[in-house]
Image (cartoon, rainbow, N blue to C red):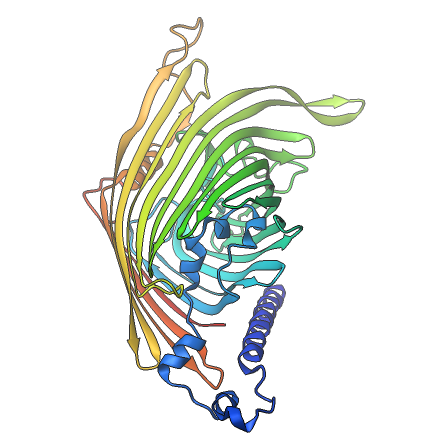
Length: 570
């Protein structure tokens, strides 16, 4: 019943937003049709008449079909953390869409926590709106996922935390995702704008076979900032805050008497191995429900943008500090800290009806995870958990970088007739664990992805047919495991003694990240105006496939994804 109510609530809100935008568009198109016209101006009177049917060229001029994705990526302010940049960056009075989508995924070239047979479906709506003194951005989405033959990580977003919990019994998993985002940029003075933004996400995740687990997660992002505009320069700054909580509950319902093992990966696939009810897993601790995890972030971003006729160059520099904990009620098993540095840039050069775009991004994360030394003591007749100290057990550094060039032909109406893209992405991750002094275990992995793509719009009757293709090549390398130590010798310590490891999962993940593979994506979208108000309705078909080279640990070399979407723009 609770799930049905969620479905109804999400669907109601989505339909309400769609209806508001639909009504606004209709009123705008029909405004003034009821006014009387003088006889001397008969031509204009006929054009205002509901029976007047303009030619295709006139219709195209009066009712342009915007490309939402193109608008969103054409100006850095529209993807910035600072919502104050919305006002002045939204290039059209309004562009929105609402769609229902479905996806089917098959293939065994997957990471250790993914499904080789899954599907998802959902509803999504997104909008930009510009008024005289205020501009808005909004997004709502509901997504349902169901995957078979899933084991591995029991966390919602593996890799997001400095540890992982892994179980080994394949089963069906489901996930429900709710996303709500909103941003507003408003004029304070002629040169100064303010902005606020909120991004909220709630997830439910569950496995339906022993060892069963259920997860709940909440992720909240808030930002507040301003932008000051000079003649050709824009300066902005904003504050960032994030809170993320997740709780994992495990249970065993079956009566077969089978015992289920788990592995607690504390770094480079070394850690604790044993029964899921054991103390090392922290899933069945007295007085604590499941495994609670929480993270908080605070930071700031600075923006500087240059504008002149036909030229725009947006830059954003961000720093955030992330603090994480596992445990509650005074029992904190681990605590971590991360420094996050980011850069995003978009340069646009317009010449006549054509546009050249260059986009770049960079992200660096320096993470340290510490394990507390705990002991339960009876203090005044009350059992309390006492923290005697902590030690660093894992450190990780990760870099993401990307650069892309895009050429848009006849893009003056924010729906290019043709787009050509080429770019490259780079990733590396180095981690070092030190669970038993003075020994260390480390890993290094890196990969490069190069891609080229094209979109082409064709006029077909009263509608538009958009065809898309993208080719990509991915390759990587590194070292799955290196052994070392921080001191040459330690008295009374047996050489080579270290924590339990999981070689299979370590090699599997490393091979998946570093494997050489080729990728192909194909897409077709047909959009046609429907009804008296010419509401653009579209259907979208997409397919993508991956084929990998020789593999030793990953179960398969192929992966395919089919996607279908039906929606409208308003």
